[in-house]
Structures are given as structure tokens and as C-alpha cells.
Length: 117
Image (cartoon, rainbow, N blue to C red; front, top):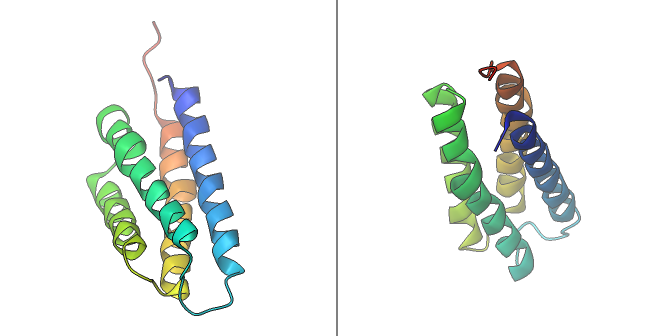
């Protein structure tokens, strides 16, 4: 995957996170009882682990502290998807992941210099 394709993937991923935040914001309860929403949380985290994290680690030389922090955030999202989580906890995790993707990961990939062939 070239740089522009990966940037589009990151931006799309950020949009999915924002959409999930919006869906969770309308939940009236203090906890997320909806199995569908919990599955969406799991899917978001799985995309991170399966498609995004490894590409960032192996192709874009992202600082391991940043990736480890993101890894922990998405790990907590996976854990929350297996129980009936607090709405506020999930929203905080999603907000933190969205912020990291925008301010750290996308910016780093944009600045990353690729070889000219």
C-alpha cells in the first residue's frame, strides 16, 4: 500500500471512529447495552490491530511510545466490547484514539519521506 492509500485508510478509520462516537452519544443509558454497538467497538479495535498498527510499526517508523499508547487504548476498547461498558469510558477511549490518529499518526505519515524510485 502506498503512502496516499494508507493516509486515506487512516482518515477513513478516523471517520469511522467519529461515527461510532456519534452513535454512542445518543445512547440514553449510562452503559452500552446494545450488542450491535459493542460489536462495532470490537470491529474498530480489530481493524487497528489487523491492518493499521503493523503498517505503522513496519513502514513509517512511528515512535514506539505513541504506538504502545494507541495499542493500549484499542486494547481497552476490545475489553469494553466484551462486557456492558460505561458509555463515558468508551467515549473517552474513542476520543483519545481519534485525537491520536489525527494529531500524531496522520501528521507523522504525511511528514514521512518515501524513497523516489
